[in-house]
Image 1 (cartoon, rainbow, N blue to C red):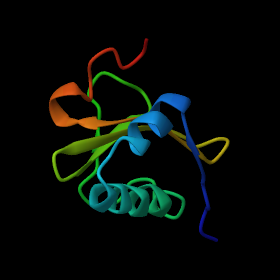
Image 2: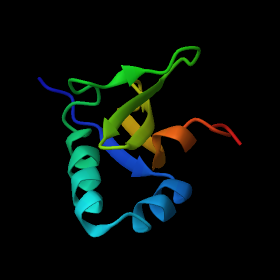
Image 3: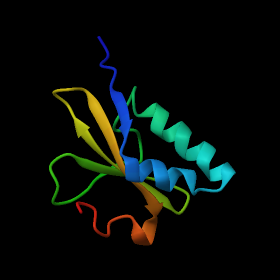
Length: 91
């Protein structure tokens, strides 16, 4: 049986999502929605040095998220430009 994950957006990620241009907003939303069926889609990468943090790219933006296997939750923490995506990740 395939595991279905719940996807939660952190408050900060919601704010970053709202600031995106409409065409990019649609692409990012589609990728975030797909995480419920497959939290490790093709092209995603584990963030080196972290236990459960992953990243995927949509154009010049990065979606940074955490996977909790025991609770079947994907928590989206950041949606930022690539050069800003990893700054102060855990503040």
